[in-house]
Image (cartoon, rainbow, N blue to C red; front, side):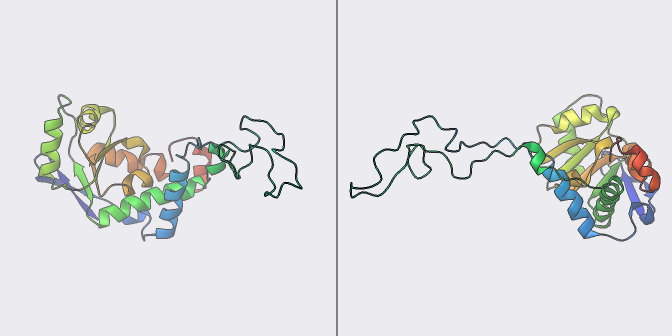
Amino acid sequence: MEVPVLNTKGEQVSTLTIDEAVLGGDLNPSLIKQAYVRYHANLRQGSARTKGRGSVDGSTRKLFKQKGTGRARVGATRSPGRKGGGHTFSKTRTREDFRKDMPVKMRRKANRNALLSKLLDGEVRVIDSLAFDAPKTKVMNDLLAALGINRTCLVAVAEDGKNAGLASRNIEHVTVCDARQLTCFEMLNCRFMVISKADFEAWIAGPSANTGKSAKGNAKEVA
């Protein structure tokens, strides 16, 4: 696969040869979805809380006797059926209850397969350099316009692209992420992706490239 390398004016200056087999060869939508759901679920804070009847302030005394009043039977004021009472099924789940796990080799393959899908759809813009002299939003706006980006966009930058990342923060529908921690979740949340040639090659040759048996030993690295 030949990927065009563009300059900041949107003009092609060279090409980058990518072996599709390195990115998984054939697309595996079910694997990509499984990894996407895993990354999404692990972002949940699990901080939603409601009070049950045991957590609401109030007396536990029965309001009136069970028989002889001609009225419906009632319990305490903290009963879920009464105003100000507790919730029948209160929310008490924590962050860990929502977390999902996935073998490191599978999620690395899913990340690379997601990149392949975006390359096949022509949604990746590889730039020769994203090293801006200053974090100017106008410069990034001009770059996106030159690249023909009119939808949501992910700007993946590393240390040398710090100014480019700062220049992208105030642009609507633009998301910034660390190129070294690029996952299928970030890639699939945006229509286009902009990344420098150096960061692109570094990601492909980085820890995510280790999808064999030795990947277990590097599970602590970015996956």
